[in-house]
Amino acid sequence: MTPTNPVVAALRRGDAVVLPTETVYGLATLPAATARIFELKGRAPDVPLAVLCADPRQALGLVDEPSDAVRRVARELWPGPLTLVLPRRPGLGFELGEPATTIGVRCPDHDLVRWIAAQVGPIAVTSANLHGQPTPRTAAEIARLFGKGVAAVVDGGDLTGTPSTVLDATAPDPSDWRVLREGGVSLADVLSAAAPT
Image (tube, rainbow, N blue to C red; front, side):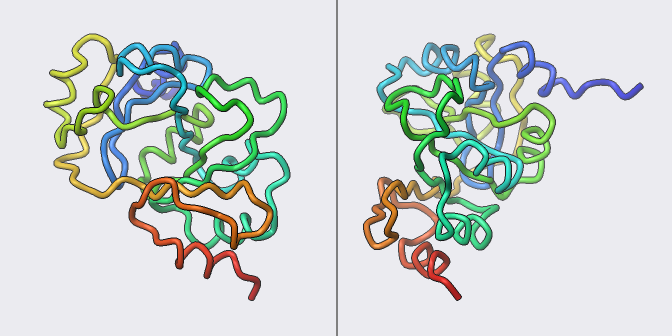
């Protein structure tokens, strides 16, 4: 019998962990245990958490009727540093903060994170910092910051990447999509991927 990965076990217990991504370190729990993240960050739930997924199929399964344009973007630009904010599937039950009608989904370009999401399901995540403060670059700094508040810190080295682009893609027409946070993927890249071939 294969022993359970300690990070997987911690998430399944409802604990918070710190994971590296291709951009910055993330503070993560399962979507049913996100009160822990808000407590650790000192942040109110009026700023929603994003969800990291194993693949586009898992991500778009959380979305209410994704359009063909959204599917094309997912196919072309994931895995990668792009978070799509989309209408949330009714009855999902995730506690991600407000608003409860949308969900930010991303498939990161990081094999370990995608593997973990394949084991435990979608992972609620936010940058591993205190609210309003810069995100530490190393696992050691983050371990000192959160101490025993997290069950595990996965060391991914010195991470200095640009955070993911966050794009509001809730409008049916891609020309009405808007960038909420500039990051590693441009709006032009997204619109190019969204266009039918």
